[in-house]
Image (cartoon, rainbow, N blue to C red; front, side, top):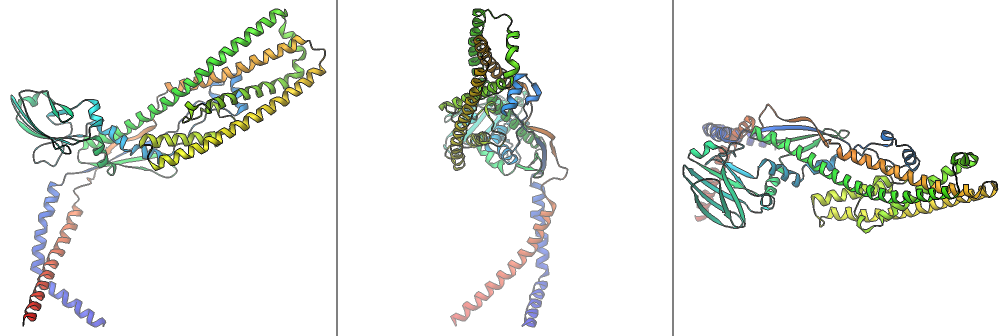
Length: 529
């Protein structure tokens, strides 16, 4: 059996070798498509840029250290810390259709200019410029083709829309000129003074930015250098060196602008919340201080320090505990008011109020879920299944926040009740302490509680103001876009492979088809006889 297969293979090889002239002809013929490919295929280059994703850093307690407020924040576990970067999320944002649209509109890549019978789109060198208003630029939903013929004193424009099927032929004696086709209106003008003195023809395409973004989604790659690194490599291929660099650099700029805008929006919300609470605390503090002043005047208490020293050493430790417990109860009350407010249902809980929650507690987890859901909503819509999953997770976590706040309230009330009970017992033993001194202690305690909360809010306000004033790119550019030395196309290797395939496929296919046709004819004649 093996000998028969060997003889059959040899006979096939010999049959093909006898037709060597056919293979030679196919080889010579394969030069034609190879030369056409190397000649007319646009020379394409690879572009690379690298960025470092930076963590969100905010000033901590030690950075400002505002006296008692810093101490209160330490005792309650309240404070801000740097946030980590989810590299996969940031890659998805950079490659999102919305971010690509921003880049395309900024560079004007949705408007394509080309000469007649040219494979190349012109970039920053077209003699004409087609523009429209900003609203039309964003909302346009049809493709428009313009064929422009320019002669001194006469400009002829043939315009048509693809989806609407509209056609217009317009003639102008000079530019700029308004071109209205269907619901959209465009302005055609010369891009430089010298163009008005020449005769030329130009094809112009005006495309929706979203369509162009779809065509670029697979062409722009964003990858992390390693699983333990925040460095991203952004690559693309383009035949125009200038446009390739501008695409990557502009994409990075638009990403930084978008992240900065989002960060400022969140900081302004926090600032508004803190300012509202500061106004409330100031009003309460003014009331307590007025009552304290009236009390001291009524009881003629001039040597306050001497009066307080008589018993301050005895109940100092108890006072500190009561002040901290009262402050914590106020913070919890503010937290409960904020989270149960229907207007804040879909908002993050400010880090200021993360009472004893810690970095990985329920409130931090809830805030992270809200931010992730907002990112889905920003890049998609409420019908997206991923958004619905994220929204359900937020609703479940919100119930956990309610339970945590309620438990914290009960624990704080119980602690405060126990401390006051001990205080009552201590005052009962201190029968020598005058009544007015005990009342004075209550006034002072309320004053210190409000002062502590006020200083805490001031610190958070200062941190937020510093964050608003600090301009720091989320993606720090390590390497601006540059073009690689070796072109990505046309590739001589691809031309050589194509020649080899044609040299083999064409003769073999011809011989096989000829033999098959011959056998069919013989079979046909045999069946006739």
